[in-house]
Length: 86
Figure (tube, rainbow, N blue to C red):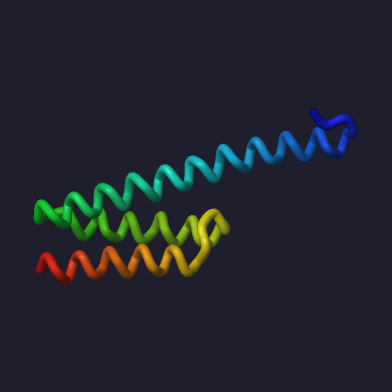
């Protein structure tokens, strides 16, 4: 455990940021899963789910939760799935 006051504050900040980042990662995972399922089943609202997944990826990369190249890679793979299914 930290002893100094500044180290204690840093630990509190780390816990808060970790929780926020975990939430953002969970949103990404859920959005991607929903979009992939919608694409494979050929649902009518697949476009909305794809745009929601893109949005979550963009937000996460902007917050530096994930790297911008990872976001681009995941978006590219999603687009590839869409073009294969069509």
